Image 1 (cartoon, rainbow, N blue to C red):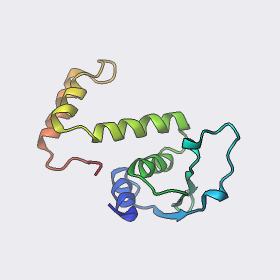
Image 2 (image 1 turned 120 degrees about the horizontal axis):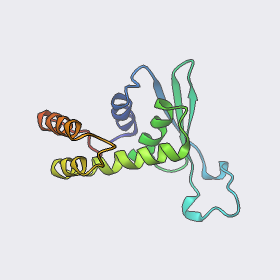
Image 3 (image 1 turned 60 degrees about the vertical axis):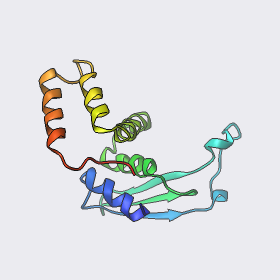
Image 4 (image 1 turned 45 degrees about the horizontal axis):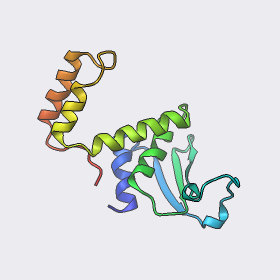
Length: 138
């Protein structure tokens, strides 16, 4: 899927349709890293957010992945959440979207009761059964 297609998909899923998002590739040399940063972590993906004008620019020095788009748009949707929270939710979304329908239903039923009541779990599964299209990472 193209960058614009990925952005639109998650912009729609996160109900950010009133926003305009752009991407801007930057050179790796434009990013300064700490000396103790491992080589595998020497890449940059980040978003500049203009809340007033509802615009965002995703800067990146490597090809954007769907997980990158999810991560950066989570920053827009939940601007007061910290990086650890955004990382956790991104990983949850990515992993859930890799499951097939049966795995997802099993995962829902195995959630601790303090997360979801049995009645709510049944309601979610019923809605899943009604859905023709799941949000899937391609």
